[in-house]
Length: 160
Image (cartoon, rainbow, N blue to C red; front, side):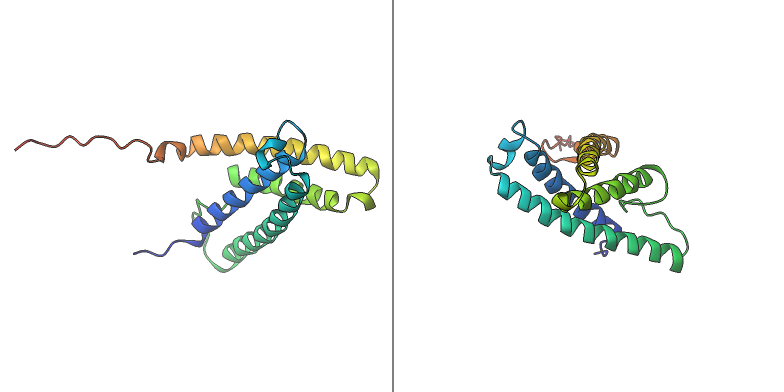
């Protein structure tokens, strides 16, 4: 059995953490989405902060891994790594960078000026909606949705 590449693991851990951030974040923003976590605002806020903290550490780890790969090895095709310098990975890196910065500002909300907090919240929420649309596009584009084993095709065998 071949070992699983770190890029593949990083991709799916990134995806699971992002899913929990989107779920808890949309539950925080108001009554329209709060039903997703049982209308329990303190739970939603705690989950979002904890998962966000783990996500930021994971982002830093993956970024360090990417830089180390670029410095120590020949450039190779890393099709699973969630961040990079061009294409979808570059777009993902830019959105991630802004979400981390605005998330840190919102974490310390009482200590930051009101206008900064409002702009940070608007950017954070807008990029979360953009990220959700981009993830759906990514799943369709990469055909992850079509690989679900919901229906097994019938095999046509020869009768003997």
